[in-house]
Length: 102
Image (tube, rainbow, N blue to C red):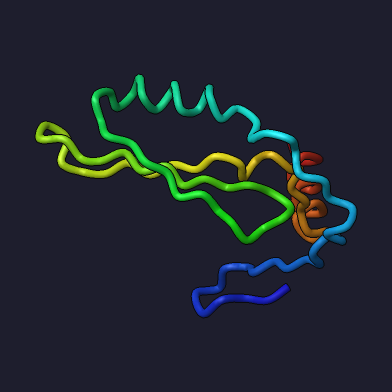
């Protein structure tokens, strides 16, 4: 654990053993996320960058192009929530202290 120049706590943790992680057969919630974004931002051309390096999780970065009425691109990801995330021990301890106060 360390501190940044502005005093923000920087947490670190050991990476899990990659042999223990099995990627899911398909990206979870991919269709639901895509449908949601197409409802929020209809009539946009869409493309995706597919992550190729990891053998643990498949991540897509989806790009929705700008329109004349909404002159900005929309980017969102799929796949990053397919495996469980771990919290460093320090964060778990901080959370338990906060929960005990409430």
